[in-house]
Length: 230
Image 1 (cartoon, rainbow, N blue to C red):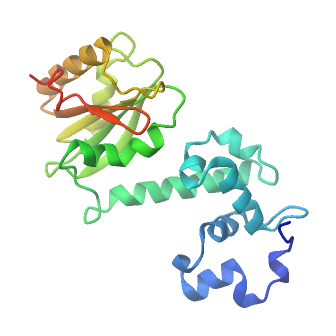
Image 2 (image 1 turned 45 degrees about the vertical axis):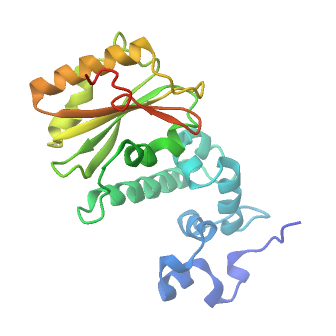
């Protein structure tokens, strides 16, 4: 059985917050970083053990990021304030990776784009439509959620796809959506949406570079397949 302890029982040099102060955040493992955010544990579990339980429950940080706020809030020992702290910290980390111009990833191929989203999107239980917004050097500006539900040209308003792209002064974008079935074969609706979005992009001078379909462990590039990109 896992030993139960309080962080206060540890020597000061072994406590997560003190170690962060003295050695830097990089010296802490993920359990300990979550413990710093949680601040306190619950009866029978230290904050570190609560953090470890959260990672096991949701399948790591990526799962914790994907989890609905109320799923996190309802975990034993959390509540609204701690759930909000965790969600905010994860989102700040995500934004940091794409807001620093010198470290923002550049997209040079469909594989580069898929690599940014495939791990998360392949596990989603509903279809999600997102757009990877790019600057003039094909560096990522942001990855935005556009729509959740059945993704086709009848349900998705093309104008919504470009709203954030215009606001963020994007030069280009890549559409991405997932097939929860796991099969990334494009459908006729996927082809129709691709054509409609490319046409709108021409009018707005925002190039639509590709439309990726994410499946389970695989993806399809509509551009590579020459579907809607003739």
